[in-house]
Image (cartoon, rainbow, N blue to C red; front, side):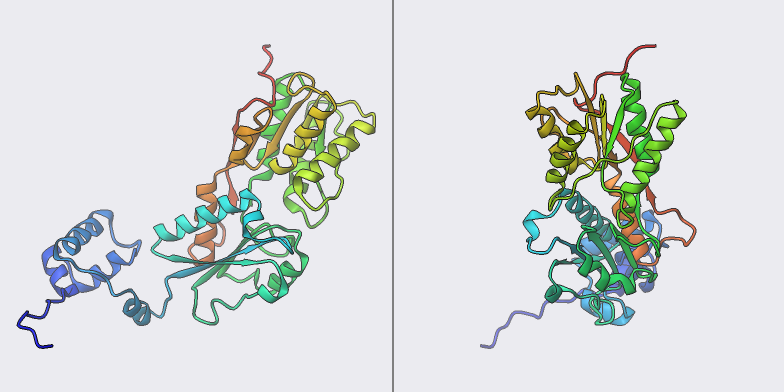
Length: 345
């Protein structure tokens, strides 16, 4: 049907450049998140674009640049489990990586992979993404074996890989374990047990155990062997490991758990056996899970800086991390109620 209404004027980047007092290429770079543009210039360009109602044609921009402006994030899950059953720690990493990518001007494409029919590592080759991040459980051998060939690439970053032949983004496990053990020592605990799997494929847990041994020896105390019993889920591993520790008749007044999920199972078993926490035994975990605030008692833990973890993962996958930059995420102690207050003197 014919109409007398005039065609709506389409604002161009040239008009935005004129209003902001910059050239056209600066407009494009400012609105695409180019870090070479100053915050002051970016703000001026954004203000001009908003005033004129200018919107970037994202598809055209991607075609011109040859970049997808997308980062693929693969979450490795346990076989037979769906996305709702993934460890909350990995959801924390997923959220922080998505946020970091967004701040860098990228969108995130998330793929949950648990069974062989779900496996896919070709997001970059098929022009769906410019970089890839892999994270999730280290216990899915088939998934990690499938992705192993790409883990050393400069456009791939990982957290939780069971392999040691490539650079990994990881928490500062040694510093975190030192914080945990010294916190228990500060409350007067001297017979501290370590619960966790220190197998070759559990590099992060092994590093935490080695640091535990080092701190105990520095204080002239005996560091016992790690206690760990296999089970499908971390909480069940914690329950079985705590039961084995009690049955062993080994004296202990403190427990450092290699992860929070395992610590939750430890707390349940201690409570069932009538062992008071923190009165009889102090318990501390590692991961900083928010659910620890609601355990009984609330779990004292070592928490990695999730925001920095996301930034490191995104930067490494997008080739923005310097080769000599350490990929260790700083950690901090989160005080709750599973360890007594430090003793004086």
